[in-house]
Length: 148
Image 1 (cartoon, helix red, strand yellow):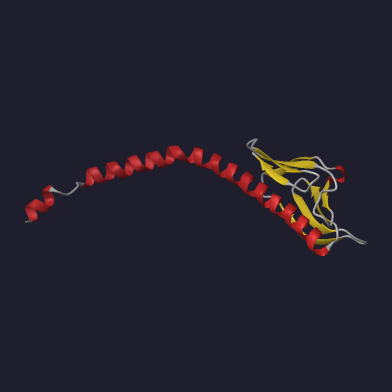
Image 2 (image 1 turned 90 degrees about the vertical axis):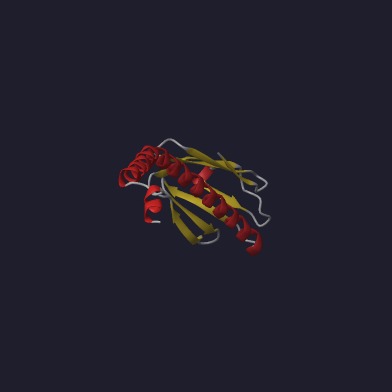
């Protein structure tokens, strides 16, 4: 019985060889995973920004007061209730290594009226340090679209 057990088992050398091959494969795949992670962060942040634009749009419709998303500098934006004075609802920072590449709205903000329409059309392009970009487009009708 014991002899049969040893004939069907792996030796220590075979086990170490398999573990070594797995470690080698994991080491070779790390650069690809890092690139994928950076791409994932840009996509995630772009979708979050689109959600915040839609949130400002919904607040405009439900409260019947214009709301805007104001792009403050290279890595910050705020959701603002327009009025006298403007009221900042929320401020968000972009992840490190990701910046606003282009903001194509006059005044650097996207404003929505009480019907949910945008004051003007425009887009925002975010970019990471690897060069991956993502565009969020706002149309005059209020339609918001993420473009890879």
